[in-house]
Image 1 (tube, rainbow, N blue to C red):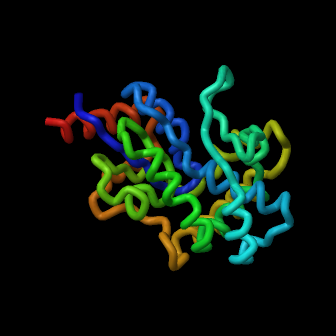
Image 2 (image 1 turned 135 degrees about the horizontal axis):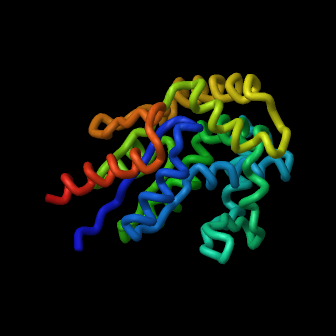
Length: 222
């Protein structure tokens, strides 16, 4: 059996999480949500009163963190220092902090080895923003999943509206700001890897995206 490591990068709201989970399930691979790791750092930093641009504070924080994924009856959960924080990291405040903190060298160093260790045995789908460019430049198959800003904002709003946290206009504004932050930062900017397969999901269903990915994966194994 061919062992592969697959990366799926792209901006928020493009459908990476749903597609990555389904693709991993279809392949019977591990699914790793690396964005959750950055959100985990953001959660712990906010709880500790560490600013997103406090490099020394972030480095000290990261040196004390012990984060791992656990598969439970509730699905994949993020455990940080023994506490399940999965349901606490999906807020606008955490999203913006994670975007800012992910550009800091201390945070990236902290998570780089952790992510690579998770992928050493392959047979995994890694979802993130720099998986194919920085973390796994030699990944077997790389995808970059994109969609229009309005489509992505509408999708994210549908996820958040039950919590009443933001209007769709506010979601689009924050998403546009995060896109700019992530794509213009000096350290590991958000961009497709040179050898990534780019898929625009604006007019595609989740099944259509996954089937297209499976087609490319099948071709890569021939």
